[in-house]
Amino acid sequence: MKKFSIILLSFMLVITATLFGCGENTKDEFVTLKVSEVTHSIFYAPLYVAINNGYFEQDGIKIELSNGGGADKSMTAILSGDADIGLMGPEAAIYVTEGGAQDKPVVFGQLTKRDGSFIVSKTAIEDFTVEDLVGKEIIGGRKGGVPAMTLEYVIKQAGLSIGTEPNQVNLRTDVAFDLTASVFDSTDADFCTLFEPTASELCAERGYHIVASVGEVSGEVPYTAFMAKKGFIEENQLTVERFLRAVYRGYRFLLTADVDEIAESLKPSFVGVKDESIITSIQSYIACDAWVDNPAMTETAFNRLQDIMISAGELEDKVEFDSVVDNTIANKVYKYFL
Image (tube, rainbow, N blue to C red; front, top):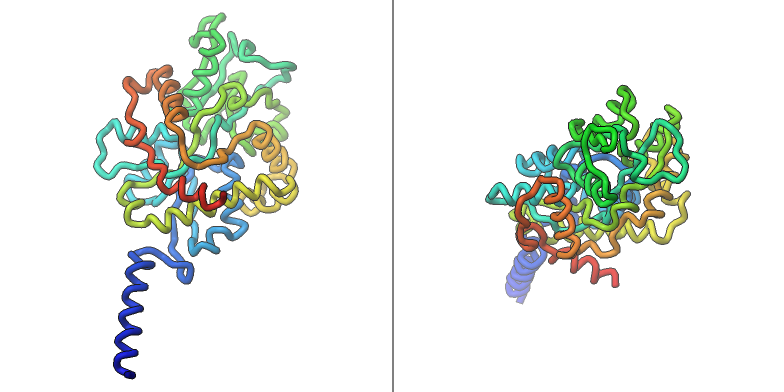
């Protein structure tokens, strides 16, 4: 009987390991995920709240966060294996899909639903409109990046043309994403687009002015999303699901906490940034309804992003939704909280 009990116990342990291990972590052990973010901004508040409030640790995950300084660099980190998960615009995955990569990155969860940048002016402008950009120079970031393409889309939607003539908008797309603020401050450019808290910090230091939210003007678009190689997701489905679930808990915290509580949760991720700038940034992103309620990306939103890319001359033909986006995990996470 004793021998039989030992055999039975061993059998049960094997079954348990098979069902719940599968090469992934359980809540009793930790797995480290290397995450590359396109930039460091309060625009991605749900992620930082999840880190600082311990939501990842509660699900057995440790996060190693790095700033890619642009979607091109964050995508390179994923492709090279330097990062497991990337947070960037879906356009990066579309470019790679067009290139025919074998183990291509797949979007598994959306985070933001509109442009998170703000138009910063060196002079005060009351009741700013897009027409105020005519005859002026605005730094929009890197060519092919979503910030530059969305701004171009906004300009064209206003019936304006882009160029260097006095009746045109001089849109610069020759500046690296992480150098926009310094180039703007050191040149004669009239405007630039910046994310928070960089926008508020620069305005406070230099006397500049935030005159508009690009996201409010452009409308909804799947701006930033989490992605990973298809093979990585298949091998680590439980871990990826727990990752997205922790981020979503961070989003739900933003819905219920007051602005001071949110600021306290964000401070560890923005050391050196003034409390006033953090609070202003939070209020700005809440006001423009920056984050998605459902992390599953819709095909309609995906196609709108592709329309913006085509309008910017960065994409010739649309790619299939299912070739870039897999909502399996996002749907599970969303239903988990219903």
